[in-house]
Structures are given as structure tokens and as C-alpha cells.
Image (cartoon, rainbow, N blue to C red; front, side, top):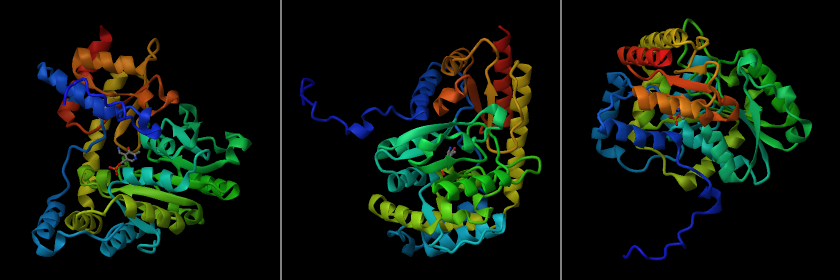
Length: 397
Ligand code: PMP
């Protein structure tokens, strides 16, 4: 084919035309280029667990993969045993009783479920309430569905909880879905059960579905234990919760997640998914079941590793002149830039270029997040400490 070939007919669909590639996809390319030039890059940007799952989980995958009868297509939405394991995990961890398959759905990581929820619940013109800062997939799914986004600010002075009563009545009357995410990415904030109680009551009153995204629910520090929204009476009538093995069991690359709660919404998602994907590799489900039903003590030791890193980041940030609070959960430290700087993308870009330390600009998570930066805890302690040393020196210049 010659380079002058006319390919203007290869225009993308309108629904995708304005999308840029995901922030971390572009960042990865920049980091690769810097490394090629010899820079010693330390990544405190993405939230991808650096530690592996325990051996007994990997053994379970291998044993299952060696069997002759595990290589065909598996059940849409997860095997019965996977649904049962999800229900058992919810019972043990939260005291929440779920009917397997009716109130549980297997996902290929929770991200695809977040996206699917928007496709099955939102018509063009429907309003969706999305927290700012918020995980970008909530807005991406809404935009592809043609929905109208109403941003709900999560402000530091409100402990990063939304003010549900401040949402205007005309917005509420058209709103179909409210997204929540606790423990929160990017702020590390947590929600008490009393907040979920209030939110469930609000959802009943305004007839709005709550989609609670809870992949960090098992990464808690200093004795804190994060609740599930399904612990609230009446939650199943108005809420679905997304959960994941990515962070709880260091299995981010395995792509195993779950949606639980309202059976009607799960049915719509099941139908949508049965058109879009053909479930997962059986040995991956098997290993996920082993993770959820097996020994849990190793995750306590793993959380200690994150806690040490968190303390190193918080201490380093304070020494560098940031005002920062200590997050009780999740794998991030969220910090307001010191006075005089507000452009988070510029700050992160210069920090990377001049020190090799890669962090995430707040602006990736929304307009209220401008002026903040996010540090992730997925790098070994000595490298995390080295990154903080570089930051402190750089800020002194
Ligand atoms: N929700 C939030 C808030 C996240 O931070 C992430 C991953 N970083 C996900 C969902 C998706 O996780 P996964 O698809 O690996 O389950």
C-alpha cells in the first residue's frame, strides 16, 4: 500500500472519537523512553501490586491447568463454585449473606464490570452522579453510553465524602446512578458504615442505584476494617458492589472480580457480558476460589508491607513541605501541592524529568483534584525511600 492511500473512511465512531488513550498507557511510553536514555526511574504512579499471591494460590492454578478438562469455555459469568466462593467470602468478611448466581456475578477484573454497569443502566441523556476525584472508568463508561455526567465534589474538608443533600433537585430527578468508592482511589479516604446507611436511605428516597466500587476493602491499616455497603439493611434493593481479587490477593494481572448485590442489575450485566465476553480460563477461577477460601493470614502480613511504605511516603512528604494526612486504607497517599504550585501535570512532569520519580497528577481524577498528586505504594520500601529522598532534595532547590 502506498502512503498516499486515502484512509479517511477509517473514522472512529463518534462515541470514541474524543477519547484519548488512558493516562497510564501514555505514561508507560514516556517512562520507557527515559529508561532507554539511562534514567533510573522509580514508579510511584500506578496502583499495580508488585508482590505475588501466595504459592498455594499459584499451585492451584498450575494443578488446574495441568488437567485435560479445564481448557474449554467456562460458564458465562463464572462457574458455580466461583459464585459460591464469592458468597462465602462475603459471609466471612462482612457477615453479608448472598445467594450465589442470583446476587453474585463473576467479572474479568472489576474494571470491565464498572464499564458494563454504565452500558446496561444509562440511556443517552440520563444523568449519572460521579465523584470528583474519581476513578476514570466511571466517566468513560458514562460517556460511551451517552449519559450526562453530574460531578459530585469530594472535598478535603468533608473527609472526601460527597454531600448528597447538596445535589440540586432537578439533577436528582433525572439521575439514575450514583458512584461511590471507599476505601477511595485516589485519596485513600474511607467511609464509615453510617455514611453508607445515609446513602442507602437517600437512594431509596430518590430511586437511584448506588454503584459502590470497593476493590481496596481488604487493604486496611492500624486496625481499621472497611465495611461493605451491603452490610446496610435494604442495600440490596438499591445497590451493587464491585469487588476484586486484584488488590486483596495481589492478583491484578489475573483479571478476577465480582459484582454483588441487586439481582436485577446483575442480570442485565450478565446478559450484556454474555454478548461481549466468553468468561474466564477455568484454572484462573480455580485459583481465585483457592484465594478466597484458603488461608487469609498472609494478607495481614502483606498489609504491613504497604503500611511501612505508606509511612515512608507520608514522612518523606512532610519533610518535603507537603501537608498530608495518613490514609487508613488503600494503596495511595494523596497530597496537596505546597503553596505556589497548582498545576499537577506540570509538577509531575518536571519531577519525573529531573529526578526520575514518577507520580500521578491529581488532574487525571477530575477538576477538583487539580492541585493534588497521588503516590502509590507498589514499590519496595528501599526504592520508595530513595524516591522520597530525591523529592525532598528536588523541593529544596
Ligand atoms: N476501581 C478502582 C477505584 C481502582 O483503582 C481499580 C484499579 N486500579 C479498579 C476499580 C479496577 O481494578 P480491577 O479491574 O483490577 O479489579
